[in-house]
Length: 116
Image (cartoon, rainbow, N blue to C red; front, side, top):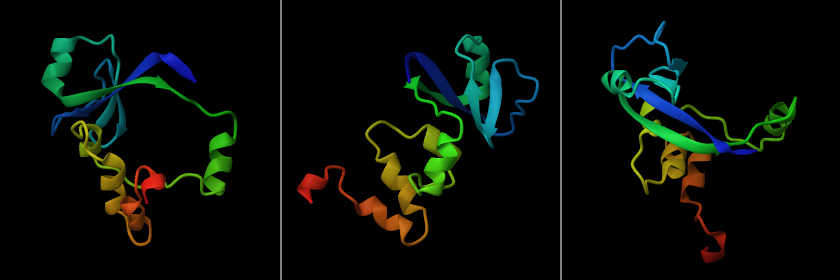
């Protein structure tokens, strides 16, 4: 785990082709990884918005594959709008509600199970 690093995801404006643009690396669709040392004015012209994540955690060799095999994760599709969801919006619940049954039922799970 690294608590001193920061990662930045951005959403490029519709129609922007990120190929060859220094400081942007396409993740999926309109979602890009943004180099935090990039020219802010240039990025302002290209991006609808960004979200900065302080710290990150990684996996050891094969660890993620093992966790996926145990069903420790719920892999599901995302939308570029998920990156820019406003503060205090239940993104976890919002994404789960888009999934098929029975996964969508997890959206009704209370945040604090002790109040259930």
